[in-house]
Each structure stands twice: as structure tokens, then as C-alpha cells.
Image (cartoon, rainbow, N blue to C red; front, side):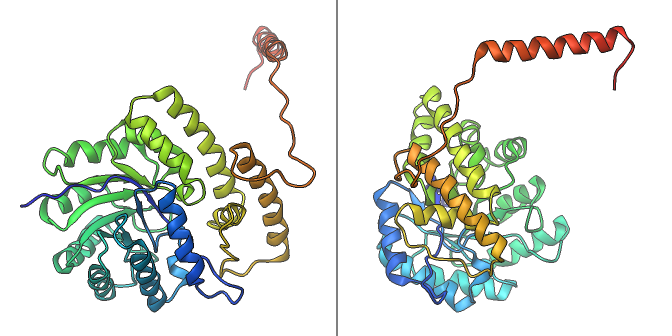
Length: 343
């Protein structure tokens, strides 16, 4: 089996800018592609979860890849999301994205219907046997049937077209098990993490890169974190990982995914527009509050101006106050122990 250079680096799962009618804003999508490439991302990953692929029609998904492939013009590789509702339509998408010059496709495990490991294997085997383009598995157990280590190992051994996995579980030991099982047999097989909160530790245990939603908003930080980690400048990388975690948590957990990322992108000057999912009045109010919080976080990184009225100032931690609290807690625990109390 001829081996090719494996995928590596930061692949951005991009938001799709929408206009006031909720249609794809082609001009802004093209500007966004140039903006990301200029800020150092290694590749683009359209039609992923951050790109809300389930909220577009099959024709729209193909159009998104057409626009991005045309605008990218070979400057960076494209890992195209090709998941459709069944194997026949997925294979058709693989054929089209191969024609458009994508480097590979990412295919999520079957969703809605929960499949056994045998069913997951059969699904990917069918696609890999008929795809003209390299396939990366996409494990996101929160939304789709999980892909376990034996299944990944078997697909890697039997299917030359399966060239990697994008794992969004954030499960570090599972990633280590996969790398240990597969890399000795397949040096071309890539391991990408989709969990931004663990990018640095994933790189340290052998991952080749990531498909990270934060790279669509702060590509400068994500790319620098990747570079510093690979260069062994771990103190600086760790500092960046903590800063990235703060942004990631705010964008992911403070609104329904991926609205926080869309709101942050608007603050970076990309006209992402509103998503297609309808929002209640309460959600709109909460999203406005989040936008202000995100503006403060981005301002702290030098990527935005502070909102009108400024941002709250965090008081520095007083070591003496912490010590007093610890002494009080220890004292209470000792009293409970002496009196026979306890949980």
C-alpha cells in the first residue's frame, strides 16, 4: 500500500456566514476563508458541527464546498464534511468533493439510530470501499454512534482509504489507545482532536493536530498553541491552553452550540449573521449578554475593543485571605472529627 503524508495541523471547522434572509452569504464566506488562511490555519473543515451541516440542504452543503474550494485555490487542504443520511448519498458527496479537489472527507458515525460496533464498522467499510477520496472517521459520541478503538483499528487495517480519525470526545486515554494500536501499522494514519480544551495534551501524546472551533474565531491563538507545543515551549503553550479554555468554555457552554462561536465571530469583524435555528426572546437576551462577555474576553486578547462601559475588573487573589479560609475549613473539620461528626 502506497503511503501518503498524513494530515496534520489546525483544520478550522468554519461557521457559514448567513445574510438577512438566512441564505449563504457567498461574498462573506469567501472573505472569511481568506481571513482564516491569512491568520495561519493549516486547513479548512467545512460542513462540520460548527458549520451546522444538518441545517443545510444537500445542495447547499455541496455549494459550500464549491465556494470554499474555489476561494482556497489550493492554498491549504480541505477536509470536507461529507456526512449524509445514508451510505449512497454519502458516497455521492465523496465523489463530488473529490472532483472539487478536497484532500479528504470527514464522515460522522451514523446519527439518530444508535448502532452497535458491528454496525458502525459495516457503515464505514461500505463507504471506504466505494469512495474515490480519502476518508477520516469522525467520532462525536454526544451526537452519534460512538466509534470504539477495536472498530477504528479494524478499519485502519482493512481500508486503505480510511486515513485518520477526528475524535471530539476529549477522551485522552482513548486517543492514546488508538495511537498505540494503529500507528505502528499505519504511519500515514492521522489523529486529530476536535476538543479544544485538550488540544495541548492531545498534541503531547501524539496527535497530529486538531479540528478546533476556536480556530474559527481566534486562529492566531490556536495556531500559536500548536506551534509552541510542537516546539517544546511548554510553559508558554500551557499559558495559551488556559486562555483558550476560557474562550472555549464561554462560547460552548453559555449558548446553544454553535451560537456562541457565531456571536464571537461577529465581534471579530466577520459578518456571520444569525443562525437558522429560531430563538426565543429569552435566548436572544442571553445571547446579547454573552456577546458582551465575549467582547471582554476578546478585548483582553487584543482582538476587540472593550464594550461601552468597560469590562469588570477581576480582583487579584489575596494569598492571606486564601490561607485564612483554609485554616477555618481545617478547623471546622477537626471539630467535626473530635465530636464524632461527619458525612
